[in-house]
Each structure stands twice: as structure tokens, then as C-alpha cells.
Amino acid sequence: MSAPEATVPDLFRLDGKVAIVTGASSGLGVAFAQGLAEAGADVVLGARRVDRLAETAALVEAAGRKALCVETDVAKVADCDRIVALAMEELGHVDVLVNKASPPPVSPRPRTPPPRRASTGSPATWRSSGPAARASGSTRSPRASSPPR
Image (cartoon, rainbow, N blue to C red; front, top):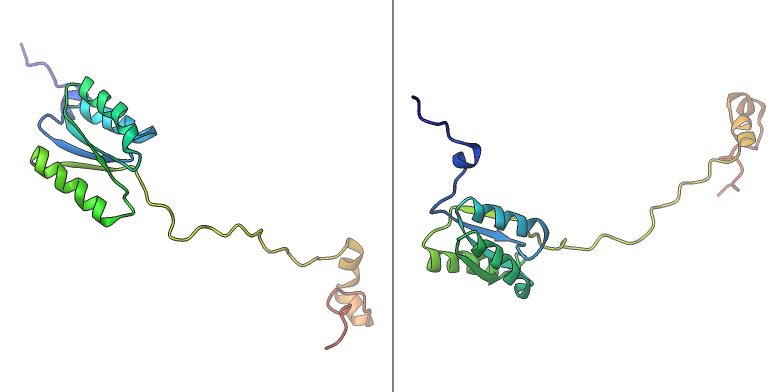
């Protein structure tokens, strides 16, 4: 009899590994943290809203893994250095980084409406601005309708 083949979850086990997940207070960050814990990793949870990390930590611990909560704003280099330093100090190493959080844009997008296109006139103007109108000297073309400078 041959040995049973490994299942897909067995191939991706993270037993003994340590993962850092930023943005772990909501949405995909929570899902990543929970999935990594279920795969066997201890998880360091980072987010600006540290009060909301308790729920994510409970999910990690329910999977039988360690959770470490660290207030982290990824827009601040010192916070990024601190989460790694705390992971190293408390858990000994870091093997996986999931950077789900992202800093706000450097400058906000302008809220001005897009520029308006110049009027192209009516179909009658289009007909009068063609080659025949220019050859006849017609002044109904949009270019010719503005006063000379």
C-alpha cells in the first residue's frame, strides 16, 4: 500500500512560522490573519485602530495560535520598524508579511470638475465650416466667428 498523498492544505502549512498582517482590524486583513492562523502561523496584527484588533486576535487564538496586537500606521516608518521589532522580540522571527494596509495618498485628488470641451457648434455650423464654405469665403465657421485680435 502506498502512502497517502498530501492534501492542498497540508502542502501550505505554516506551522512554526510567524506572520505580520497590517490592516488587520477589518475586511481582508481579518481574513488574512485568520487564514494564516488556521494554516499554523502565529500572527502579529497591526492597524491604526488597535481597539478593533481584539476581535481579530480572538479569531487567531481560536485557531490555537498566538496573536500579538500592535498599533501601526504604515504611513509612519517608525511604526513599521516597531511592529517588526516587537515581532522579533516576542516571537523570535518573521517569515510572512501581508501588507494589507496602505497609507493615504500623498496629496488628495483634486475635486475640480474636468475641463469643459470647447463647443463644436451645431450640425449647420459643421456643414458651413467644410472645404466648400472656406473656398467660398463663408464666415460661419467657428474659427472665423471670433473677432480678430
